[in-house]
Image 1 (cartoon, rainbow, N blue to C red):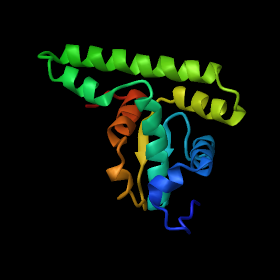
Image 2: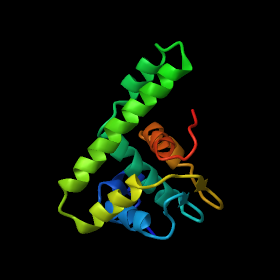
Image 3: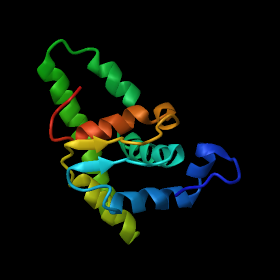
Image 4: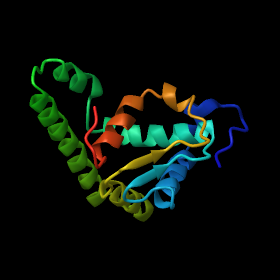
Length: 154
């Protein structure tokens, strides 16, 4: 469990390597498998750490404001679906390159696990998500969930 003993706040915690280690450990745990991510019982800080970590992965390869602006220009549903698929593929390709260019065995395992998911369920039971809802990369986190979802959702 991540503790905020120094009252530095979530953003301060996320600058610590410990937060990335926590996120990698979370991904490698039984809380994440090929079709489920479970936030069940996580604290506000823990939930925010995971949302920020997954959101930052997407943000590295996708400018969300540009993605949304382009999405508004479409008049047909198939255009939006194609745009989503192209953007998703760009993020997935970036993550695959990151896997091949990284030296951290745990990070490689975590990214490999994430990129092989086909999500059907995200569990938020008994979770505090107030801070995560204010994450600057919440949209990217939601894109991540949709990108690896078994069912396409808007």
